[in-house]
Amino acid sequence: MPATPKRPPIATLIERLHTAHPNPRYELDWETPLQLLVATILAAQCPDERVNRVTPALFAKYPDARAFAEADLSELEQDVKPTGFFRNKAKAIQGACQGLVARFGGEVPRTMAEMLTLPGVARKTANVVLTNAYQIPSGVIVDSHVARVSLRLGLTTQDRPERIEEDLMKLVPKDEWIAFGPAVVLHGRYTCKAKAPQCGACPLEDFCPKKGV
Ligand code: SF4
Image (cartoon, rainbow, N blue to C red):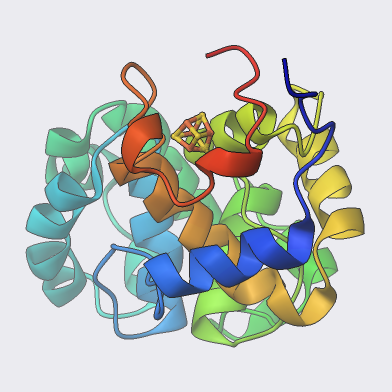
């Protein structure tokens, strides 16, 4: 029986992800860093498509950080209700926007340290905004897809997002961080699915140890 590789060759893995997802795009609709921040908060445990149905009216009603910061909270809750967990999400959006207005002139800052001062903003949300809106390689986006795929591929043995990200940042060259996260998200969404991974159609199959599959 052939030996199972301990860890996939990272350069090959990246090259094949590039081929499968040449322009990996986070599938939320947005036009400004603030809109991406709000959409990312709404996307927690909610499909991107549903978020994208809610945000056009939301962004028209609340055009800037001050509008979200000064919104009537119960009205904002109703506006984001279709995305689920609407009380927490409305509170997080308002808290983050109040922080933007109070400390950053209403603009979304450009560093991880500043992003993490915003209430309700953790590394994943900060990475989504910094890497997509500003093209700053602040880290590697780790959502549920990236966590699952990384574990199955043997890129990490950790289960906490911060620890998984640390492992990925050590393995993946920094100039690949921006594309790697969205590419793995797409790979997890369409191929390495949670319940039924499509290993037979997977471009990584020949070196994937399929841990936990
Ligand atoms: S071979 Fe299977 S488990 Fe491994 S990355 Fe591909 S779909 Fe996921």
